[in-house]
Image (tube, rainbow, N blue to C red; front, side, top):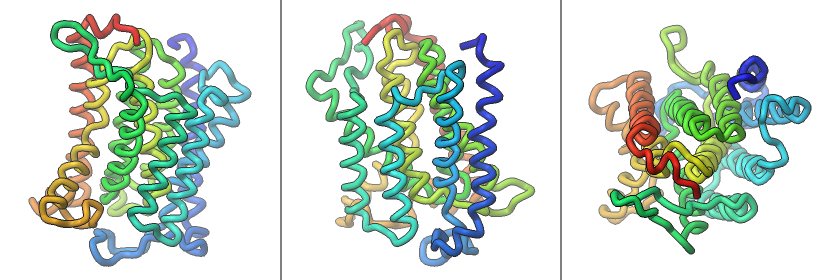
Length: 334
């Protein structure tokens, strides 16, 4: 891929600029469409905010796919990844419905389960193994390969959706995850998933210009919405599963798990605590990691920065640690 960076880098400007422009252009229409998150209750924001970040990212992906179909040199697969693209837009439609009128936790979970079945069945996603035992034997999953992939898709989509509670948090963590996934793919020579990772990361970066708090912007002007959090959750788990199983992989499945672990751990620990209290595991409360950081005195911007940096560090442990510490895994083919 090294000889094609002169083509790839200009191409990545397309999703970045389209996501940024769409995030700007859709803010006013969002008010008329009802795609606005109003303050109140457990919500931390003080002003009505358009929830069109996910829609902007999807538009950026559409533009990227259209351009890539005429530029094979950028190595962004269009037809080969049809199950992912179709799954993304169906999941985006579910998220858009939730952003517009609201869906209960169970209808949303059922939708995630059905779409996970679609992408696992049609796309052939599998978690064939978890890596190697210390003695060098493969930890194979056998008949559980497809069910575990399905569970992973549902789990990560739900976890990222539940994590989206601060300006820049979910988008920033996804941007970091996609960067590490691209690195893991390139280490294995897997150009196609690397290009998907980089293209989506560029679109997320365009969105973050509207969403991430900076010294020049005290609050987000656009939210990701369920349209964005659900679709981005689907992208990162698809890529994680694919890159973890590519022949000649450089990063083990457990290394990839470190890249994706933060929202999963946050959600699992929260749901376990709710069950132990006798509550519905999907019952909303203020006990996510970013809530805990807030109660410890961190501002919303600081809390998001801490968790994004934590995600960056966890990814480094998984990708760098796996790539340099396990030569047996580097040569293992699934």
